Length: 227
Image (tube, rainbow, N blue to C red):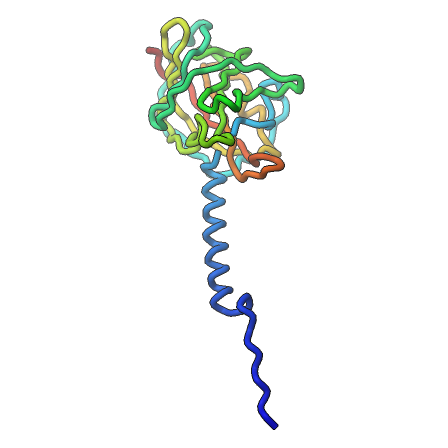
């Protein structure tokens, strides 16, 4: 009786395939972890300045903080913003005024103008006491947008906002955090402040065609100089 021939294993059950698949999975997980920390379109539907009563939620991604930020100078009187700069990221953009929509959510800048920064016009203007809000897209269908690299901003770096009266409010970055939209801490981000502070928002995390981005990148800063 002739010996039975041993059947050859399917390619997807070979040791080489399993090792290759494991290596690829590790690479993907590391990449996703980096995206969740440093990933970024506009702030989406995470909440808005009108929703500060809804608190809670853990920040996703590692928080980076400025160890000893400078103190704030006296606040400035009201004057509308005209341009927005983050020199360390090469951001130098015009500003458009934004309001809350019918659902009491902060609008996003027009998608056909991806290099535009939106400023919540019913909140403090640059240098005024309180929490000022600036938002922008990470990307659009045409490519990277104004805040494509926002999550890469380092603590203690300046953010400069020029005003209509000719003065420039200079903020210093205190920290950057990434929050899941499902548990976005409205009170922490949008809540009132005694000194002049700034929040800069864009989207981050993972992206789905159906639901958009899963997270928000939030940069916390406060006024440290006036030019």
